[in-house]
Image 1 (cartoon, rainbow over the protein chains, first blue to last red):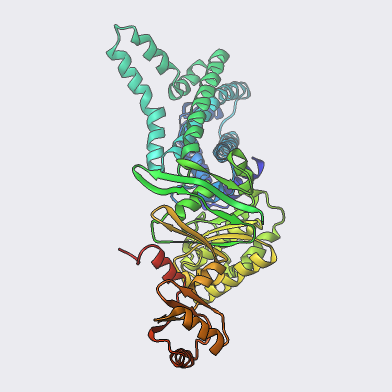
Image 2: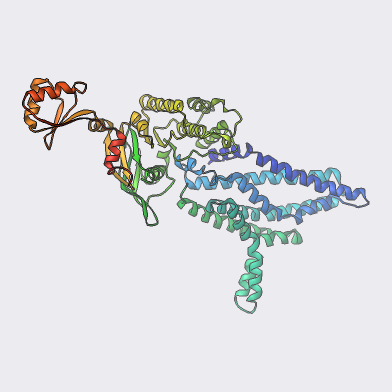
Length: 256
Length: 305
């Protein structure tokens, strides 16, 4: 597995796409911080607190980032028909699947550290600071990241499964987005339609524990570690279900 | 009897109602260069895909280096394969692509990449990305990947497609060298039967998913060798005259008073003179020769319908 992951990292870091994505994201972050500075230059009062708080309200971006990173690692293997080189050498299919997933996971964590670190450092260096409030908001950011992380991993597992099971990358991405973005509103509508039936609490329960819903709620209940624990359970369930689905489907897959 | 490298047992693969491969049992022995011959859609690539695990059989099994089932995976690590069009990451160079697979396969020593690039004459491609390669360059890189782990068994599907004449000659020499120096066993398919016949030591003929015949190159050569085919009125007497008059017993008497004579090919008038002088009437006389292509076409029943 280590050999497989080493090779995947070699490929990812030799791809312009990776570096361009990183540079674009960091540039957007710098643009956001320069927006704060612009506001401050025109009589506003943007602080490190408000800058850091922005991270907590933008946690949903992590889902899309997970998708992009998954795609970066998968690297159009169906389109370029390169999976046959791995299978023909006798690399077990579960290792191929898990190797790519773990590479995506480690790469996501690296990106998370670089992106949040860069953004917070910029805010720290350029915006007004108040040690007491800053310490508080850093705790909130820590809580939000700790809650969002397992949910991001769950969505990463979902995207990985879609990429392995659906030949077209575009279709795979659309299906993955449908699963984690479209299902919550569908559950909500179903709940409303069956409000007077025994199905209602089921839809409500499912809706409450959808990753996107949980991530959006995290900032409002910062410090509730029981909720964070629930996020880890939900993330683990998504991870287990989609990994099992993905591996079982990929095992039977005809490699062209 | 030499070690069996590949054996398939009643291997079948169906896609819906169509059977791409039907109960195929082939045997490839250590040191063989096994030529897989068949028309488009005969099942050559399907057979190779099943052997390399890209597809799963609907029936039957594959035995590689004596291993079956789950043990096939490590056995596949001793093979090198190039099936259909060589495929690599389009955004990487030749060296980067091979380095990626070297790391993935845990092959020690970075030098192995340069070594195989040298072998296939791709060392000077520099920063050129795979997506800009010509078909010939892609074939060479595919071959480089197949050779990188010094395989005991090479599986090559149409490997000379896109190679220029010089490349074909180099490739032929490379295969012979691998086979002779490293005892590499090779399973190879090609539409260019003259090329196949210049390297193969045995053949398997596939037609519509069925294995028609497995034959050694020697037997095929014997069946195809050039001869004078004589149709006479008295075959036993003609045979006696050939032995006494021409001093040869390098001939076969076939049913229907037909004699195939394998020498005196450049002296047909001497043969006819001897027979006629001995009182044998020659009804027909022709020089007959067949090659792999003719043999194959004859085997499948006269070529494309």
